[in-house]
Length: 317
Image 1: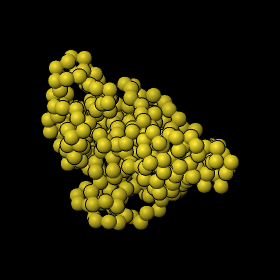
Image 2: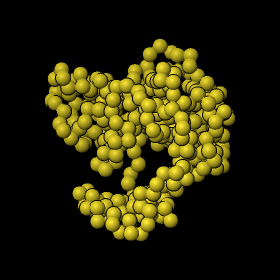
Image 3: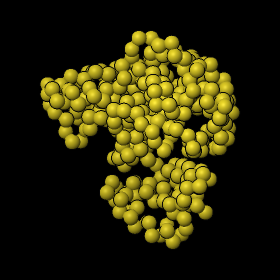
């Protein structure tokens, strides 16, 4: 697809083209408005040209990693799913490493192709660890079924960072879809910011994370329902790789946010992190700020902000 205008209609078409597995080339005559950040737009593109040399240079600095010569590095991508076909399969098949896709299927329409293993869901930790045991690659890539890796060299970029940085695990940057809401966009910029170099961090995210398989066989993921990445990173060296992008964002829905926040914060407490909303008094004190923040984005976001607070409070209880 050829992108010539940065407007909502054009970017909506880009989103649909990406989901179909098409390549995106930009040919821009104008500049970049403040509405569209180059570091979020460029990872959606496969190539970029612009009449303004500065715009082109800025976009090219954030393009996803191109494929290089075929590498003999062997990687198994582990994708738990209940969907007909995980979103990122076509992108994983185009990587410039020797990559096997292992789909852990636990219901729903059966995906076609690749290596499909039917498993009963046993929580995020135990299910993924079973995939590690079944994997054949020297490295394992843990990802999710609604994430879209960008660039034919993105997995190799993770491998190179893992080895050059001496990390126990590395993870890539999450890029929002063009349709993603403003709150999620801001949070993704905070959690996985732009940059040009990998660096050690105090977090880990299994949306797009790479390990040596031998590491996870020696030190398995914990058998917890959620937050296995939170538990596993304790006391280990984790690397963040901003130039390994994956497009991924969840729509904000109040009921789902409450459940996920409650369940994740239980695991945060289990590793000794203090509760953010430890009691009812703290909940009451925090409500006005949450409502005010939500009103900046509309009534729907008010419900989402309150749901997250209630989830933190329920976890602490």
